[in-house]
Image (cartoon, helix red, strand yellow):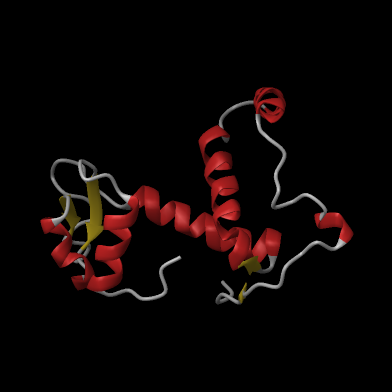
Length: 141
């Protein structure tokens, strides 16, 4: 999770989580100005248009962030920072398979479950094996 929207945080996130060959997409916010030295950067100036002439836009990521915010308000009501990546992975999976039938989604999960090892993070969770962690109290929508 990135707590600051500045150039140092953007640089660190891109360096740590994006392949060097990845194309990055960003709006005109000044915190993304220095990313051009790290990766190929595509910019969209929202004060002029919602996308560039070649179709570059940030609509997908903005839509996904909106879904995360709606999940916080409508499903989870709070996010544990310890499991935040799990919340986001779940929402990303839901986004990826949203056009599949419930049957196909069910069989995809059923087919993958036996191939995964037992989660040591959840083993004994129902018995109270829950280490304390931070709680993200985000802004309500």
